[in-house]
Length: 305
Image (tube, one colour):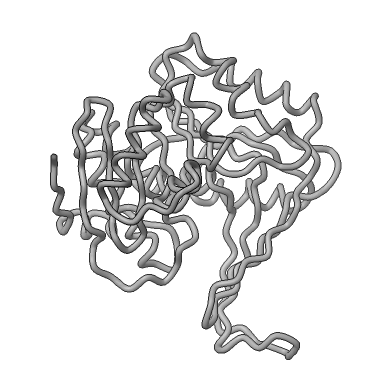
């Protein structure tokens, strides 16, 4: 089973406005409302691709109930911990000439709630996959990813980490199965700007030397590079399409990778599926569907070196 953890789930209110003007009354042309958060996005896309998962995390108030309700409507399994005080956050995504986001705070997570999460994680079995994705709320320990991986270190679990900077670097000693920085995040971890595929590969290998097994680097419109545990390098340009939505594309890539690997145990198939799924979400108003992914999958051309 695949489990995803979202520490600070949200309701994402996505509004499209023609030529947004600050300080003026702006009227929407379209509106969408989705359960949000990186782990939740992974669970939704996994479900769209026919894969079961269980979404874990913390919810609070009427917004938390709506997050769970909408996940139920998608057909996703969940096992959230309810926080007695506060509200799950609402994130506003404004689509206009430029994309603008206003992200809410979310409820405070106390030690009792965190212990409940550990008890849920104790139920994971050998062979399961755990996805840790996204930022950490200010009310939680900054090293919570590290603590979770240390807690589960004796279990034979595939852990996927989609995080940035120290949050990612500090867990590498526990040998995550997959990490997925983008090319900018990869450079930031080493205090540099990566300008070529060779530099990206070199720095991905540095992360492997620190403990990561498979390093998947997304490069937006330039495609992706995977430096695999076995030493092979997979590269592919992005499929051709018009980008409508950057929100959730990276999470979709993770979901596609896990789907491809679960179905074939082939790293190359996982890479192809990941790139197709991330692109399908980027080209859609919503998160990727199976039909969209299958169409793009036929266009993926991978170079191995």
